[in-house]
Length: 512
Image 1 (cartoon, rainbow, N blue to C red):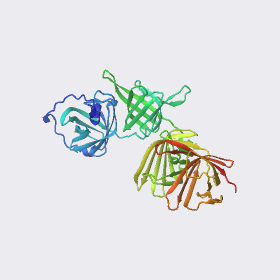
Image 2: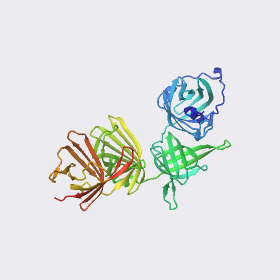
Image 3: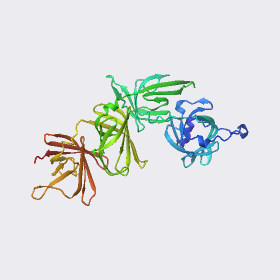
Image 4: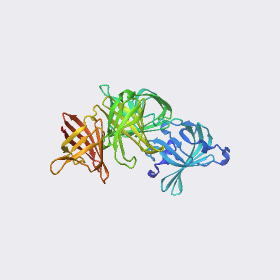
């Protein structure tokens, strides 16, 4: 049965199907139902709530999102079953066909297996629908499984998938024990993972690191989590988000005991206020991405001068998605709402860039955030990326200190575009000169370049230049220090195979 572990058995488990053979009822037993305009009313998000008149436990619920009359997305978490195993389906796509009051959903788990779900609607309104449901699986053209039941769905008017992001602290737990700690914190990240925190012996919150993974999804109001402690079996949890408003969130769940009786659980959560509007002021440099140190060419500096305005600096080399950009103190509009910071900027190319940060931790030295950047051109999205970033606070800005003539003293860590026997002269106008010695040992400015631009923002130094008749080149460094006529640069580089290495340069100021 391994080959049918896709959509059929996902739905089967949701509905508690035993796969016992079912007899067909006579059409005479079914009253004629007028046209219910299913195709007009079905668009939206629905959750399975009842089977054969009985409420479903939360761990058996599924969310169906009908994005059109021909396509639906289904989300469900299913635990171990003798035939199915474990399934984790987040917005799994399936084909839909509607003919009057009849809806058919088809999927093919493999080339020999066909799954057909048929819903004959008996009632549908703006808030719920009821249908006689039949699921059939055929293998090699022969019916292998068939089951019938009555299902009731309710309309989901809220989708908490974005609002749940951030750091939450439990305030109360009612109705019995749960895997979630009543004295814990949960931090939901944009990449579909979460972090779990407990207090250590000193009363400080510490993330639990003894787990192999921690995944979650929110679809509408359904929240599903799964995790695995090292050396143990995978565990799962299911909740419905009853309310999420401002900094308050309430979860509810209907559980079933081994004897078939049911009980209710409830958890209340409060969002941790990180005082972002005050703490975010100042200059920050992007340091880590998804837990890995960023190479210097991927770094960016943000300067928040108020709660409504910031500046961004970055040198972005050519890429298929976003092209090439030179961003030197680009102004951005800022909005801050709780732990969420949004920046909107407009480039010379007519593109709009929206950067969203849901900050999960911040102090006077660093902050971490769920990050999403959207670039729009002509109102259409052309690039979207989501990740987890860490920023370091910058207390020094070397933009003024670097101005002047510098001679290289040493380079370590491999070759670089910058000549280890050269001189660089940084100017106030955002340009620079490059010097080499001629055959007579005299320093001469290189004049074969079409342009030589630079910027320093905080500790980030970016340069770009173009030799006549050649392609543009770029370089990135971080200024480790400038003091007493001495300057040091460092850079983290990435090889083609993904490994990284560190480069360094030392400079001495020339006083002429």
